[in-house]
Each structure stands twice: as structure tokens, then as C-alpha cells.
Image 1 (cartoon, rainbow, N blue to C red):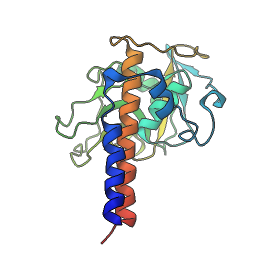
Image 2 (spheres, one colour):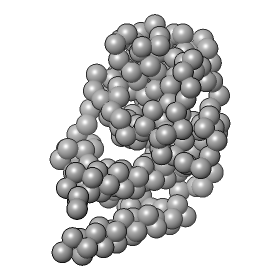
Image 3 (cartoon, rainbow, N blue to C red):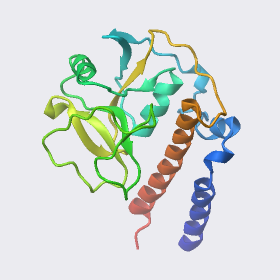
Image 4 (cartoon, rainbow, N blue to C red):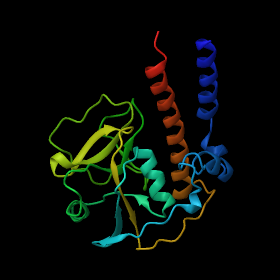
Length: 221
């Protein structure tokens, strides 16, 4: 019976893993990322937008709740912003002055490829290599299969690599205090298309993580 269940779950995972970005559709995005079940049985349209606070030249929202890295990415975008992408020392200084000194916060740098170079991180917002990195003095771990970057409270909010499936506070950014609703684009070169494909990829990763956690907890010999 257990073998049948394993095969069934593997089949679901394989089917989801074969969502090719070139076959991307708004319908698939709505089904998998914006589903009522994913957002705790609340339709996305019912989630209120953030009011962003101006800090320096940009606007930010500093969360009170904790989420996985990928969920923080999605939540910021559903609230018409983006998970923060820190581009300079000046921006880092301005943001960290506002942070709770006992909390860690996600930024948008990630490395979901376990075979890549440790400190080769990509910005979710730009799709390019991280523009500004300010690490703690600790050796950054190669242990994690999926690595994301936090601002670590114990180290004056310097950057630190942790497992993307830890729950952290997060920071959203926007260009104005009440940013307009984002528009969908099917053009491959557009950042909106790329970001939504990243969200779909995260949903697949989260399913894998959930299935593995289930077997670790209940699937023993």
C-alpha cells in the first residue's frame, strides 16, 4: 500500500515538474499560485494591499508575519510590490536602521541550484547576479539544497545564507506608497513573465519539500 502511495505522489510531482516555462499561461499561474487554498482559503483579490513607507528614495513594507522565502516573494507581488532587492550600501544602511533588532528578514537573493557556486546568487527582481552583498564573517553554508539570503539580526542585519524553507520576516519594496496592480505579460523578455515563472518554480519546490517532510515524519520503516 505504501509503495502505491509513493508512486501516486511521485506521479503528481513529475507532472508538476514538467511545467515548461514556454508553456506558461495566466490560467496555470492562477491555478497554482493564486489559488484560494494556497492563500489560506482567501481569494487573492481579498488580500489588502500594503501601504509602503518611504525610506530614502524608495518605499518599503516591513512585515510582521513570517513566511518561506518563496511565499514572501509571492506575497509581496500580490501586494503590488517586490521582495526587496538591495542595490547599494546606502540602501542597506537606510533599511537596516528601521528593522527590529531581534528579527531576521528575507531579501530577494536566491540560489535554487544545488550544483552552482556557493556565493553565486541571483536577484529575483532583476534576474541578474546580486548587485550588493554584505556577508557576515561566518562561512556561508554549502549544506542547504536550496539557499536564500536573509538579513541576520544577530550580526547587525548583515547577509547570511539559510535554507529557503525556514520561515522569516520579509521586506517588500515599491516605487510609490500605493503602487498600482501589476499587469500580466506573455512576452518572454519582460520581467513580469520571468517572475511569474519563478513563482511557479517555487510552487514545485514547495511541493517536493512538503512530500519529503511527510515521508520523513510518517513514512518510516
